[in-house]
Image (cartoon, rainbow, N blue to C red):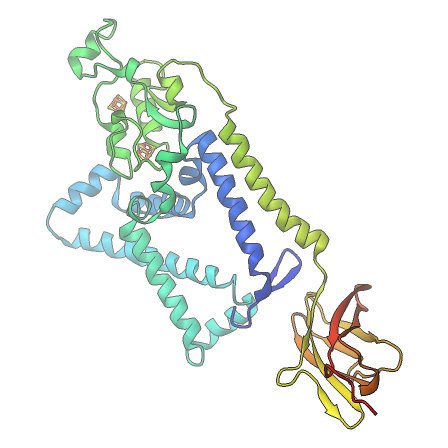
Length: 405
Ligand code: SF4
Ligand code: SF4
């Protein structure tokens, strides 16, 4: 990161390749729009690291130590005692340990693992910046999973806010079958469940109790729903106990819940999929096809356009070369110049490390009497390692009027 060098999928990237990230993110974003329109918030429920880590690691640990949600709520409401303090301390120690692991894991994306391991072994002295990052990330992860939790989905995450424009009546969502569940009721309705006036929902609030964002799915699709499907499992358990069909709360589209015709393929799906594929294709074409394993730019040396030296005119150029191989590579330079011109190339053979860059001068001199106006000068850069070459064109400029003898 510090050197602005990035290695991914066997390719080396530098700061000039940042534009690729724009296309990659665009592809990912349109892909996410496609997925949301088609299958609702499956990303939130099954793919987002926030949900995956919370539901897969932190909450199971909490359940193991402090019991289920009801037991936790009761304990939180009760006064402090030695057992409550012990359970809370154990839980937080485990949370901080996991946050430390996750923070170092995240850092390993940017710092080579052997170097990171060595830094950990030698302590924070001498690695203040990295240590601050590690501790900052640990604190952030711990704060997020120990306390902030679903508030991130509801308050911070912009994707959650977009749900109302991304979903339509045909999108798959988690919902409550109002036709089947209403009128809801407790014991009285359970007994008389055969009656058409009585719905299958026994108003047990299990679906509300398990919901991490604390919403009641029976009130319809809501922005706070992260699609975790816990209310489905909870309601199915209740239906099993009551010997009623599962699926009172289930995955379905609004059209499905309203028993109106379903239409999976809609224009918006094709538009999102097409835009996602186009952006991904741009990255693919550049990385796999158009990309040269080196970057070369021919620039005019700053300061003067040309130098008059007796009967000659001299232009000075600078070739900026970047090796974009993941390994060191060799390059050869040559200049194709018009007859009569003298070209000095101080470094015709170059050896550069991965993502190493170099600026080398090129001096072109012509007889002043023969310079009638700007003309082209071609510099050929040959990548010996990859067998690729590029020709760059510079413009030789001299004084507007040659001297009259
Ligand atoms: S309503 Fe259901 S799916 Fe949505 S967040 Fe709550 S428990 Fe998860
Ligand atoms: S869990 Fe099912 S039966 Fe119980 S309140 Fe929720 S929707 Fe109704």
